[in-house]
Amino acid sequence: MLPKTRTTVNLCAWLASVSTVLLGGCVVGPKYSAPAVPAPPAFKESAPAAYSTEPNDTWRPAKPQDAVLKGKWWEIFNEPELNALEEQLNINNQNIAQYFQNFMAARAQVREARASLYPTVGVTPAISRTQTGGNTGSSVVTTPTGTAAPSTGSNTVSNYSLPFDVSWEPDLWGRVRNTIREFQYAAQVSAADLENERLTEQADLAVYYFELRGQDALQELYNRTVEAEQKSLELTQALANTGIDSPEAVAQAEVTLENAEAAGIGIATNRALYEHAIATLIGKPASDFSMPVKLLTTPVPAIPVGVPSELLQRRPDIAAAERTMAEANALIGVETAAYYPTVDLSLSGGLQSSLISKLFSVPALFWSLGASASETIFDAGLRRNTIAQYTAQYNANVAAYRQTILTAFQQVEDYLATVRVLSHEIKVQDEAVDSAQRYLNIALVRYRTGLDPYLNVITAQTTLLGDQQSAVTLRVSEITAAVQLVQALGGGWNAGQIPPASQISSQGAANQVAATP
Image (cartoon, rainbow, N blue to C red):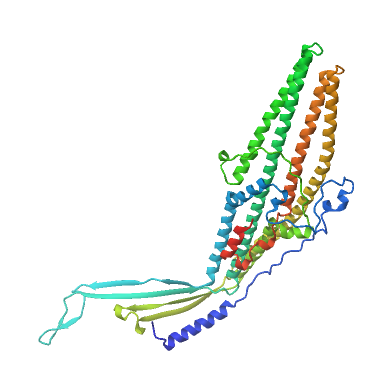
């Protein structure tokens, strides 16, 4: 270790004082604040007036004071099989895994930018040995008689050096600090995008699950229809054998039965497609995954809607749009710093000696300290137009943020209206099914007694099947619209789950984002 001489002490003191002054430099650029966006006091479609003309048993959203949506929002549907699938999706879905790695890369960029706050230190140790020829030197040697004579031997010289180079551009105007903020906000955008993708995949899985159960319900409907049509055919054949009916009625019954069988077979195609889609969502090959048959019996739960102003904190796409504005604002500050001069500090020094035993001694020490400043005098409007470009980009992000909020309000209103209207429509459709069943019962009685031709039975059967199919389709639409309403409300997420900018590059932030359900 070198002794502290007056020169080295003064040098260290000077560097410390300069660093203190330079690190306290100002930060140029506009200050960021999220633009105000007016929100209506309540969702129109959740107000009592929207249900005033509909039956008391029509679906209604939960009141604001009721339990809010939680992280595992799908549990409100009380479907254990769906719950298990959602858990697998959160672990194995590859789209979610991709977005998580994008977030990890964004965190690394923050650490990369922070490195620019500190000096760069380099070292280039070297050892050299030089030998000169005997006829090129002019050195002399003393002979045994005491006289001087020229040396004719070679000369070897060793050199040992351990130089250090330190360079530093102090962040006088906040260019580096704004760059760090830019990447911090970009990482927060990535975290919000991850949550938005997670919510999308979760909602898609729930929709596919209920669509598949709807196909099972349709399959069961066609199985019952085929069974009824088979009995009708047997009745028609018996009446034709006794001379009460004709072969034409038998042919009509056969056609009706075969049409029902063909339609029932076609249901398997859609079911298989939904099953394959679910397998992909949970990270399994479609060839290795199957789901047992189960009818759609899930009622639509009362979903807590809240007020529109809460939506700004509950949707990850809105959070991503807001953080994108902050990122664009920080970028303006980065470019604004280009108007100001830059200062570069450099320090070169090290140890050098021809003898390695004396390399770590005070005489072997050498150093050089320098500083330079640079300022652009003329750039033909480059800096001005660069700032204008990023300012326009920021304004575009503001418009995108406001449009995202308007779209969120629209989606909630859309799905509230959809669930409400479908609920009412299902009540009426169930009444139509009951009426169609009575119509078929009457038609069968009149056919058996010979009052009406078999064509009336076919008409009644077709009407009943169409009404029953519509009832199943409406129930599937209602439950999937409820899932989409939950998605429009942001699931059980809130903006507080995004790690703070100052902590975004910590391991705790990564664990927090990864653990979000």
